[in-house]
Length: 75
Image (cartoon, rainbow, N blue to C red):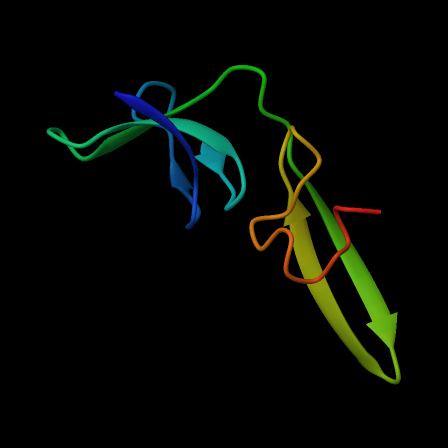
């Protein structure tokens, strides 16, 4: 198993709990299963400007999945 940041939402193979993109998971390439890492806590942040809004997900490390392209995690 290797510890990675999830690129897509899914479900934990052990508990069945859903996880979001940006959460820390253990991925087993051979079985193609993901297990949610216990200390995960992700939060969503929504920014609104000029009538448009975007939602970003930050993982337990406080960084979004797209970091550092937009700069929101490097401030």
